[in-house]
Image 1 (cartoon, rainbow, N blue to C red):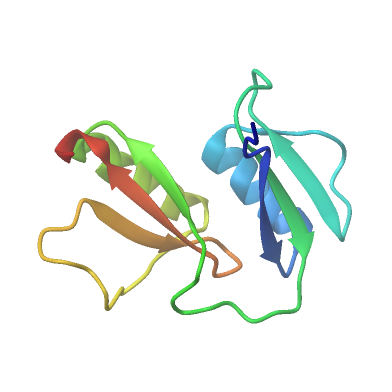
Image 2: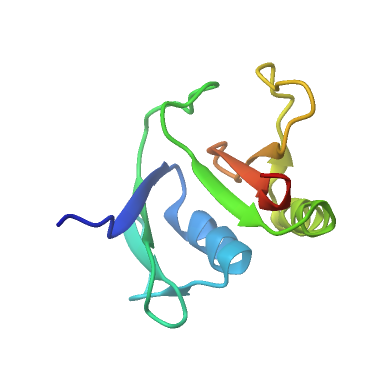
Length: 122
């Protein structure tokens, strides 16, 4: 059976992206980042890896693929959004929000969109 081993994000600055995502997720680099590629691992070695590869492709306003990061409550969601913004993420004025969304759209320092989800509302 197949499993997802890693998610690869295209970025314009691998070292900057690695610094952001290691702090955002608490992941650790598998090897030293270079200017073209790095892989980040969860501290316990389990779970999906995040790979960052140099890309010159423009960021999509409505990306076909993005990350969903889960929180357990609205309070945790608000705290995580604040923390991620302090690390360099930006809130995205998302034009596709439904009424009363359980997610907040952010962009990493490269502009890649990701969501912070309040799973307590599910």
